[in-house]
Length: 182
Ligand SMILES: CC(C)(COP(=O)(O)OP(=O)(O)OC[C@H]1O[C@@H](n2cnc3c(N)ncnc32)[C@H](O)[C@@H]1OP(=O)(O)O)[C@@H](O)C(=O)NCCC(=O)NCCS
Image (cartoon, rainbow, N blue to C red; front, side, top):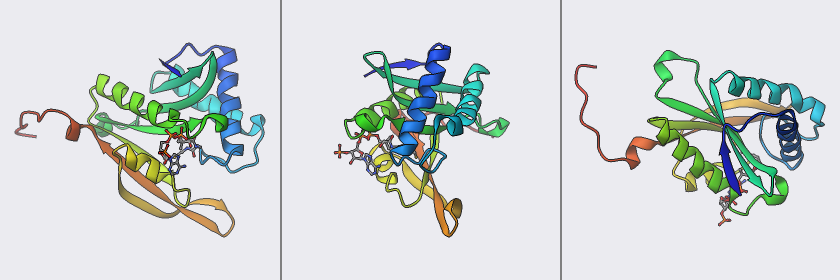
């Protein structure tokens, strides 16, 4: 898999994003929908995500294998002037037929590299409770810093916690000079 950061968003690639996102949801992934979905269900949400990339508030990391889009995530701005020093990772996904091959770990490490290039202090993401995916992120150094009880209504009578996970990039860098007077 090779990565492209902020790839040129051709119409073909936009449609590939919709296709990947749809496949991932139907494969059981927790990326904003509950299976089953068709491309038409996902397209408006995907278009909004890509519009934020077009507009420069969010960045996109895409993983390609032989020209095919197989992995994706967004490095989203927080839209808050006091939260400019960190970003939120959204929609982390690997094509169902490529999961458990190390691609998820690889694109997450790429996100860390991009975050460092951007000079960020931290990355945050949220996980749907009950999926077990928090274990994947924990292996990458993220720690649970909170959970919003029952925040996600997956179905009537099936409310899940939203788990907040955080990677402090400063933990992994040389100590910085103390700042005074803040
Ligand atoms: C979660 C996801 C991105 C992980 O990507 P992946 O390519 O399958 O993960 P990797 O192969 O890099 O896995 C690395 C390790 O994390 C662990 N892991 C992977 N997926 C996991 C999951 N869903 N739950 C718990 N642990 C997981 C595995 O133990 C693996 O270690 P191993 O190879 O020694 O078994 C991928 O499964 C996916 O796209 N899922 C559907 C979308 C989704 O739910 N995204 C999460 C949104 S919060």
